[in-house]
Image (cartoon, rainbow, N blue to C red; front, top):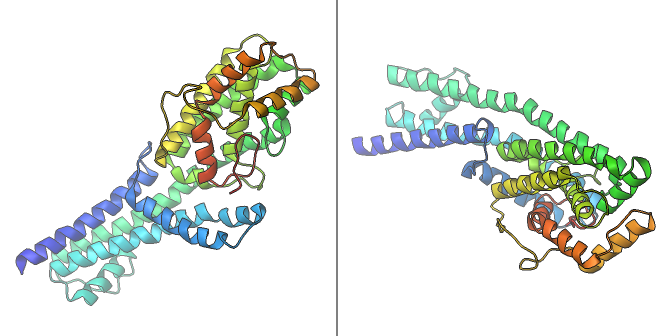
Length: 347
């Protein structure tokens, strides 16, 4: 009997420790970690949302429903963690002789929620009561403290996404971005955008890997998405480097590299497989040669200077695009991004 009580005590302590570790990895650890408890909550709630989405066809209605997914999942983490802590301490209270299972559960709930209606008789019980009360307060404080950080990162991300609509249309398009820049600023000003978005990619990589729930926070407007915005900027930079006849700007190269590294890091959080060293044509891309030629024809119609060798331009574009093609489309599918040229989404 003593062995059974010891086993149950350590089982409860292990469950409590795993719950605390889950909270720390989700909100405190500044790097991406696949936590099984957090994934369980998000996946379970996503299945419920998917059941609702089966009866919805229009994208705007789907977006309205999915806008609730990330906030619901994030808030659901707290009661899930508190429930696990309650079960863990219930086992420990029973193991040290605090009463039967019902009495132990009542004592655990009273301690966790700091209600204090259940009295304790021994020092070991008192130690468990105080530690459980402190743990409950700490879990609640973690969620409350990190919500402002998450919304600050979200606001920063969306500011650039909103501004891109002015320069690249809605939904954002690489071709439209180049056309508008040519008309309004001139192509020599494109370097400013590459530098701005290089910084944006670095910030998004840091925030969306350490706080993975941000990936699913949707833009205030259904037509916008951080995924389609990233795709439009990367495609615009790739088109500029491969087909537009202007002096090479290393800032475009750095923007593309920062972009595909960021998308790969975020995709890795969701266990998306990708080739870390892809090469075209050994690995294909999801933009056809016909689509590429149509884009160049549209750019030429607006007077943009294009390189004469279209074959080399296509190979160069595909060589850039292959670095981010698969992860971009995977993230568009995971986040149910809105339909956008060369990015897809909408499913």
